[in-house]
Length: 152
Image (cartoon, rainbow, N blue to C red; front, side):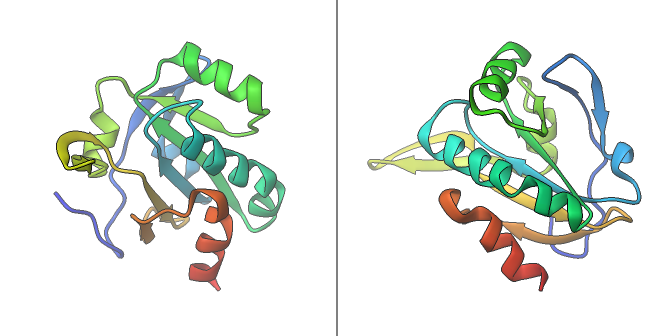
């Protein structure tokens, strides 16, 4: 299933870095930036997380929450959050249930080799759970501005 702007965001249930349940319904009445990234502590993923971190208070002021999702373990997320002082929650999805539900898993190419992997993708979800925007070509070092340009 390929999600598109205007679709109802699929409900998800996952576990955050502290083993707490987290689901889309927790954010009802709030706007949500739900971003999918391949791996903790890798250059692109760190750039993206730190860009969102550096602008986190601005996102809160605009009424947005930020949540990241990757296949990494809860322990890996805890270290990633601690190392970079990330103020938002990260969902551990090792079985790729949420990742596949949102269509963020698919065929990738690297140096001519094809393989399946996580497709870096961000969904901007409205207060009533509708997808307002989808980013598939994420600018990891400038993702905040990329999102801001779309919501003006």
